[in-house]
Every structure is written in C-alpha cells, then in structure tokens.
Image (cartoon, rainbow, N blue to C red; front, side):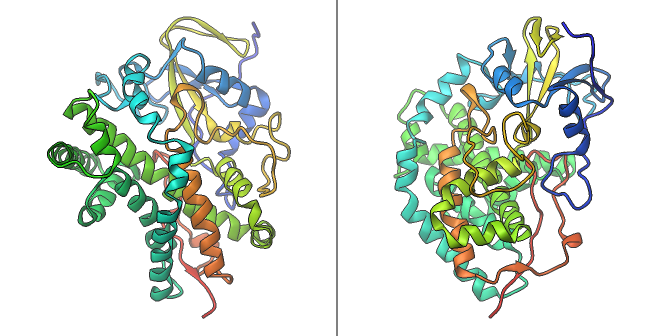
Length: 402
C-alpha cells in the first residue's frame, strides 16, 4: 500500500468567488493529488474523503461499506459529541442496508419506472404551463425559485403521493425548514415532527379511502402505517428538494453560459443531453457517507473497520479521468454515467422523474421568455449554505422584455 497520504484538516466547504457551480477548490486539489484523502472530523475522528470517480463507484457497490444510520457517529461538519445515533426509523430506507433496505425499495421500484414517469409528461407540462403563466403575470423581477423551481416538483410529487392540493403549501414549507440548512434546531425539529404527524394522518386517510396515487397503492402491500409514513417522508423530501434546486441552479448556470443556452434553444433535440450535463455539472446532492464494516483496502489505503468515508460526488463528476474538460458546461456532451443520482442499490428512485421534470420545465421556461436574464447583479445572488443537505440558490430574481 502507498505510504503517501494527502490529509485534509477539515471538510472543505468554501467555493471560490465567482465560481458558484464548482466544488470547493480544496476538494478539487485533493482529487488532483489522490482520489482518496484522509479527513479529520470536527469531533476528532479520522476518516476519509473519496474524490475520484472510479473509487466512489466501487464503494457504492461494495457491501463492506454500510449506509446504516446508527453507524454514522461522526459528521464531517458538526461535532455530535456523545449523542447516541439511533437506527433509521421504519421506512426511511436511504439509511439502511439490505435486507431492510430492499424491503422498502422493492415495492417502490416498479412504481418509479422510466415508462411510468414518461406517462406523467402531459400532466407535468400542464403544471409547468400554469406556473409559467403565473410568472408572466407577476412580471419581471419575480423570484424564479419561488414562482417556478420549487412549486413544480412540489406539486408533481404531491400528486404522485396523493397529498391534497390544499395541503401542498404547508408540506413545501415544512420540508424546506428541515432541509435548507438555515433554521435553528428547535424550528427544524418542530417542522420534522409536524411533517411526520401530517404523514401519519395521510397514511390513515389512504387506508380508509384509497385514491389514484402511489401511497394508496402502497397501503395494499405488507408495509405497516409507521413504515408507510417513513417511505412517504423520503419520497416527498427527495422528490421535491433536489429537483427544485437543480431547476433553479440549472437556470442560473445556463444564463451564465449564454452560448450553451443558445445551442439548447437552436437545437431542441439537445434537451436530454443538456439535462444530463446539468445534473453532472451542478451535482446538488454533493456527497454521501459510508462506514467500513471491516478493514478494506481502497485506493492504496487501509480503511479500518468503523471508519467513516465521505463520498464526494461533485468532485467525481468533475474528474478529468472520466470527463473531458470537466469544468466546462457542454450541453452536447456525450459522456454519460455521472453520479448525480448515486450508484448501486441506493441509486435515486426518483431519477427518471427528475429527468422528465427538467426535460419539460427548462425548455418551456426559455421558450416562454426568450429574453430571460438576471434581474440583479450576480454578486447579489444568494446561494444555499454549504452545510445544507442539498446545494442550490435561495432566490433568483429574473427579468425579460415585455
């Protein structure tokens, strides 16, 4: 094994001024030195951060690395102290290994197929048109995040799960409170508890009176009410926040790269490749965590049992050994295989849904507003903090010729 070990004293979070889409410079430099570096956690734990594409893919399919919540005793940005981390609640399968993970994943897999998501296209087009109409009516200076990027995926995932229309605003607000990274602990916990209580009521309502939605279908499986509540929480949060931030940040990225936007407008057939490129280029779900269950050799280094490993998706998606000219946004890029949705058994269930929403919403936005532009100087655009679960832009005031 190699004796040369690159060490990071802390998890880098700061992005270079004027480079809101690039990963933190220290992480990029670490990857240039080695695809794996030692990392010191705030509580003193010594773990690792993997920044290279090939190594991350290998970890994601290696059963010697665990996703179990109760093993995640250290956080790359927060000192947990002596807090005992409990196992993931029933249904919250992202923080589980097989066989518990498969118990929840299998009933869902057939309900999020590419075919079923494509069948939603007409309804997504209707929802998109409604919000473009509202944006146009509000006029130049409107916040694209609030008027377009957030409500479209929120409405789509709520319809899929059967959340009543009148409850969708409350759901969106509650989910934002515990995912934005900008609320105090008391507010975050209150929003999480309120969401759990609401979902418990929703599950009970679907059992009593099933409707045409995925949650009602799941009541016909052997999952109990507590498990269904956990599954619904994962689907609502993941189906809303990641897509909302990719839509907003993707619009910002295209406005900052006018030649790429011009190519997309001139060649509508580029929409699919443009979506994949934005997913790669932005990687709003920046990382995930694993714990070694036994001693593992990885990238020439010994990862000891019990050690935490951070998988840096955003640097992997900028790895020059996998993607040519990786820091350039290129809507014609043919190199697929990005890790924006992860890989392996935890590959994002909603990947196809997110693709369909982006494929419809972004071209529609630029078709409706061909002169769309930022309404404020770039230095006034406020981005989400780096410790938020999902990276993104908080607000994006836009203008157009009327």
